[in-house]
Each structure stands twice: as structure tokens, then as C-alpha cells.
Amino acid sequence: MARKKIREYDSKRLFKQHIKHLAGIHLQIYSAQVTQSTDFTELTNQQPWLSSTRLVVKPNMLFGKRGKSGLVALNLDFAQVAEFVKSRLGVEVINQSSFNNFLTISGVISYLI
Image (tube, rainbow, N blue to C red; front, side):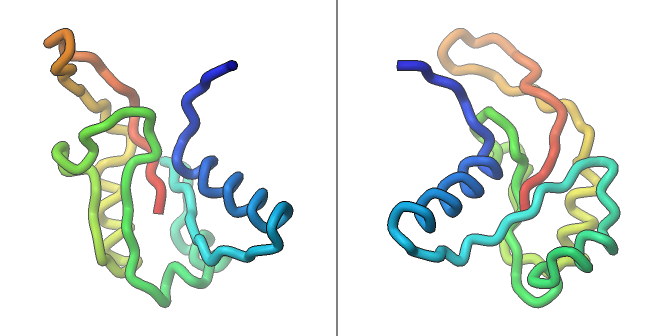
């Protein structure tokens, strides 16, 4: 069986799509992906729920310890999310593996809201 890592944004999108198709269940899972080129004003126009609900923001990366690295924020409004994300987008994250005790660069951050 093939095994491939998948980003959280894609997994939520696929899960929502397939559970609706297979079981007829519409899940109210909302997410938006933000990159360095994202226009936050345009994003709120496309996704109006962003400005009317409290949000969780975290990196859409294939590594752990996001919370311990200060990369996750909870219960923010959209203005706080924009500030939080802009200060961290494009930053290289160095993650220390407890297994081999090496420092590895895990990647450049893109964010999931």
C-alpha cells in the first residue's frame, strides 16, 4: 500500500468532499489557505465566514511541534489572524528530532486558517 503525507488543508477538503458523496453528510468544515501572495481583503470577499467567526490558525506543514514552536494561534478575529500570519509567513522552521538529535529545516511556512 502506498503511503504519502498529505497537508491538513487538503485532508479536510478531501474528507468533506468524500463524506458528502458517500454518505450524503454535509460537514461544516471551513478552511482557507494563506500564502505570501494572499490578498487578505480579497480572501474575506471570497470567504465571508472569516470575518464573522473566531479562528484558529496554524501552519499547513508536514511536521509536528507546531504549538511548541509558537506557530499556532487560537480564538482570534480576522485582523489578529492577518497580523499573526504576516509575521510568520515565509520563515524557515528548524525542528529538532528527538529520535536522532539532529536539527532539520522542516520548510517554509504557509498557513491554514
